[in-house]
Length: 440
Image (cartoon, rainbow, N blue to C red):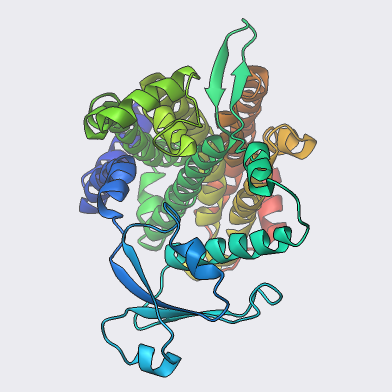
């Protein structure tokens, strides 16, 4: 029995690993991960704003002084006040645009227009909007005749950056970020979603093709249907495991060696401070959230732990759903008939995908705990919760139930499989599948 299953596993595995699509996908994903790692540095290098010359027609006389104050607008924005009519200024090619301020801007803050010759930018529009907003508010505050009002506002102004840390059972604290955990959870969930559907349907398609070619009739003369089904599932599953394992090793190597080499010295120093929880957000040269993200993906131990959990749920989730896809593939003669039945396998995956976003917003909610334990939704939902450092017992309970459910599902699927592979010319119903599963 073991020899027969081994032969089937070897054939299914080698047939797919040798394909160009597998090799290309396996190599392209690490390149994508590399691009994501290098993105912060590349963004800083390439995000130099373009030079713009803007004419300002300030009919109120209140906004231009605020725009020309030191440090208000970027150095790449050059402003020129003018009293000329709008049409004539727009016709002047020396200007990239015109900012028109109405005389009653204080009473009607919406009366400000920015006319551009080319495409606008969010940075430019938000910059002008913010300055106009502050200038209007300042003029309105002056009507209250409060002495030293600007000094009072400066003294009470505060920028708050909440630094969060998780305290372990041993009393040790570790800097964390809910936004970073949310992003990592979503990435892991989408990878699992892609693998469950892609490789699960691969099992189903393979069975349908061999059934149409009458190959199965020859194979089952020397191999039991149960052995054939398990061999196909495990063989295809090993392809997925190898691919994820390669990605995990490459990503760990990139985190350990490539990412530190790409970072400027100042960023590397602040990333180390963010990782240690000693970063002062007020004096940081870079966005604290970005620094925390880089610190997280730069931790080899953390990345290895995540890939370890992903592998557990990938194997368990694939075995569970591949059993369902195998049963469906054995029961039909073509892909068209399978498309209706496979909704019973795809629907729970889609439900898990939808709820994973809600769960990631509150990973400790009651619905999050239950959906991460129920085998039909646990692989994806639990992966979206793991980056939040949830209790270990919940993870292992979910893993245990998932693998036990696979044994039960494989037993049911095998009973359908052994009948379905010999059925031709009839589109099975749900009642038929239930009846086949009850055969002794």
